[in-house]
Length: 303
Image 1 (spheres, rainbow, N blue to C red):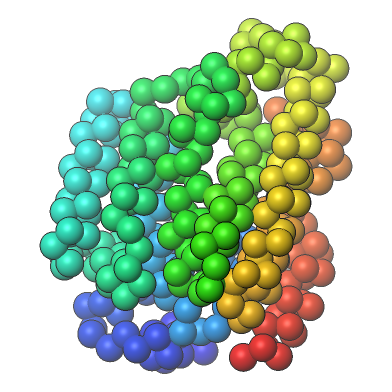
Image 2: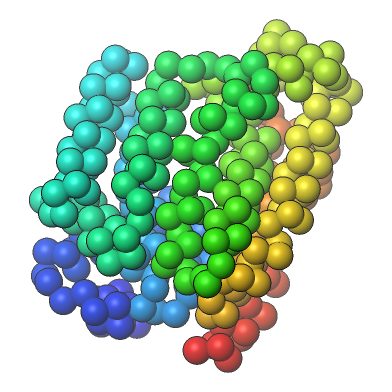
């Protein structure tokens, strides 16, 4: 079924311009967030548009910052992000927006009373990407991750539904695990952007220097550093698992599938023998089916 006929109607979204905005957010999700989009399909139809709205906002900001094909300078990107981001924040305060992404976001935030501060924190981290090229310690990195990933988990919780504030703690941990898994997979791509997200202190612990990373050859030292980061992802995933049980039952299959597929990126890094400079670790279609099919059956049974 189409978004227009099924999900939007189920979610009680009737205004034509608002429907267009939600449809655009869904387009961005389906185009750029294939694993995330697959997991979203496990939610009840009435919840999906609101998740698409959060993704559309995050993706649009991320594209301003990370579009490698862009001819804009860092200063120009900063100005575009500043102008668009400040406009969205103003719209959230005013409760209305004419932006093609902002309409759906404002509607979602108002329906679920999602804290304004989460969006401030996200945009702050996006601005950091335009000026910060490395992080000294894991604590330093976490100041970035909170805004770029943890708050996305926190934004999701009111939509997913929960009766316990402990679900927020789990959401932060799982969001952090997702982000760290992406950092491990994308080390080569991030180097092209002039950034290193693995903390310098962690690299030095295994004898890895910036120069070694720049050579793009997986040495025993780099492999050890990657193994350390992978263990961190798995520990955070395990710590977040009890929090999934605190969510509304109809939301759990979605988040469990997302957890397995996103954190499963590190399994794929191991499967390619850590050759992250020459290969892209990605979840196979077979694994997606293997995870999604039983989750879909479970999700249908709970509706």
